[in-house]
Image (tube, rainbow, N blue to C red):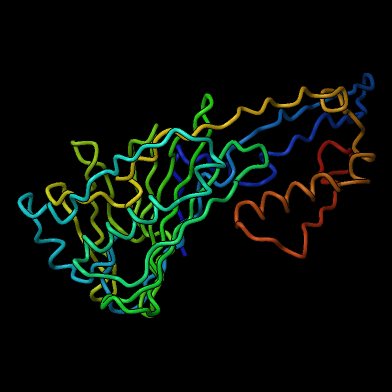
Length: 326
C-alpha cells in the first residue's frame, strides 16, 4: 500500500528522530594531539497519533463516499441546486465541559453521525454510531473519538461498517479539533481512512483521499472537492465538485462546543538529562532506553500492543573510531 504525509501532520519519520541520545563522547587520535569531541543530539518532540499512515486498498465493485453512497454517477452529476443532500446542519448544542465529562456522554455526537448518514443515504438504519474516547498521550495533550456503525444499505444489521475518527489537541486550556477522517469496510471495499482532513481551530484547511487525483477545500471554506475517478476497479470511483456541497467527514459539521483540559507542565530536566555524556563504549553497553523508546513509539503509531520489542546493537564503521552505527 502507498502512503502520504503532509507537513502539517507532524510525521517525523524514523523513531530515532525523536530520541534524546544525550552526549556521546569519543577520543580521536591525531598526529598532533588527542582531541575529545562531544556531539549532542537535541531532543525532538511530536504529537503522537496526529497522523496515521493511509493505506490504499482498492477491491471490488462498490462506489462509496463518506455517507456510503453507492452511485458514482449521481455523485458526479450533482449541481449546486442538488446540494441539499449534504446540507445537514451543525448541531447547536455546544457544551463547555472538561474532557472527562465530555467523553462520559457522547450521545450528541453519535446522534449527529447517525442522522447525517441516514440523510445522505436517504435510508433508515436500525443501528447507530457508537463512539468512545481514547487518550493519545500520557500527558493528556491529545485524544481521539472513534465512532463506528455496523449496518446494511437496506437498514438491517449486516456486514458494512462505517467509521469516523476525530483527533483533538490541547491548546491554551482548550481542546481543538485538528484531524477528522472517515472509512468504510464491507465485503467489497476496505477503506479504513479513505479521506483525512486537517483542521485549524475546527476549520478544515486541507484534505487527502486515498487513490484519488485530488482533494481540496472549496472557496466557501466548508465544501470539499474530491476527484477519485482514477480508482481502477469499476464502480468504486467517485467525484464531488464544489457545487455539490460535499463536507466529507460528518465530524466536520458537528459543533463540539468548548472542551477544556488542564495544561500539564513539563518536568524540569534533571542534571542527568542535561549532561549525561558518556563515552561510546559505555553507551553501547546498555541500549535499553533506546529500545524502549522504539517499541513505545511503534505501539503508539499503530495503536496496538506488541509482545516483542526492538533489539539494538552498536557496530564500528571504521578502524579509527570516527563513526559507528546503532
